[in-house]
Amino acid sequence: MLIDKIRSMRILRKTTLFHKLYSKLYVSPYPEQIDKPDGKVVLVLSPHCDDAVFGCGGTLYKHFKAGDKVSILYLKVMNKVMEDEARATAEILGISKQIFCESDVNNAEKITDVLNKLMPEIIYTPHPMDNHPDHYQTSLILANVISKLKITPILLCYEIWTPIIPNVVIDISECIEYKKLAIDCFVSQNKTLDYTNGIIGLNQYRSLSLKQGGSFAECFIRVNKKELTSLLKVV
Image 1 (cartoon, rainbow, N blue to C red):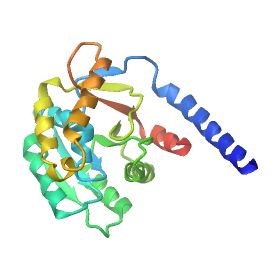
Image 2: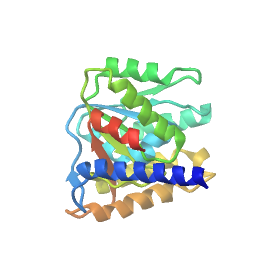
Image 3: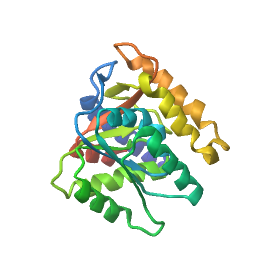
């Protein structure tokens, strides 16, 4: 009983700390609506081959249409089938560069190497509260790596398994068909779960956050590297 009480107190303390910190990032029922983040060099950290498309595929297409260079780093390539499926999305969404990690690679070293080479102005990563362990670990590794570097990119945390309370929303209505096509490329995944309708359904729901109207949206938590580290400490 005592152990359970201590555990409950620790959870309550962490939850309280998290909400105190998060309240500094989130100040309105409506997140800030932007067309896309400012910056021409974009890097997406994708724990698995499908996460980049599921989490921010519409926004990536908007970057492409604006002439930005988008690179995706895939940290955990499950098999050749999924790698090929991910490659098929590049032409649809206008991805400039795809980097697939080998199974034995050190992810921290790989992220460091890619950051130093690309010097991205914008980084997309899963959000720290995502309950998939690979998604959480990706944000944790990024926070540890970026704290040692001098670069100060905009960090946007996207949602997949666990919804977020966003502070940024992007209208992707004009490019939702491209996102659908990209999701449909993951035939192996859609055999298990209906990701196309699930993710597009989330994007449709997120349109409620659009002050200026629209039918589909992607939501993010925008943070700097210090704020990302602070969030991870209390999650």
